[in-house]
Image: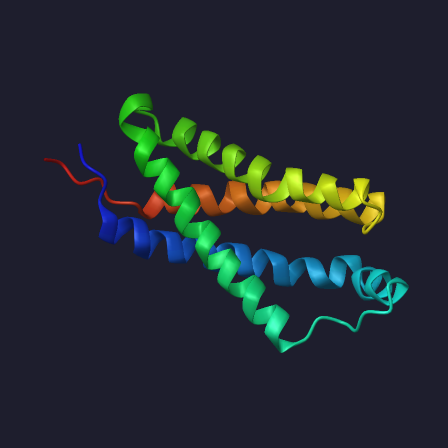
Length: 140
């Protein structure tokens, strides 16, 4: 079984869209807390450039989580296990560690960081499950 690169890219973009939608739904949930935190450092609210950056990162993370899923699927032979493991790996490296660092440095309040980190876990799990659902295995 080989990795189907076309399916990884296509399905990864779908997973990335799941992350984007999830992030957009979190904004009303946390209210102005993020903007208030930026103001604490005399920084303006996030602009179009930042939104473009985070959208690009979300699409990239979707591709990464599906790539890892495709790479470990043959060894696990379980779509569910492969999706969980790939999402936990991406969450730990791309969400948990950076978010904890922001708290340690004093840039982010703990409560807001916990909300974002837990929300991120749910969104990356969902993105990985969607990726697993649509990924097409390529048999050699």
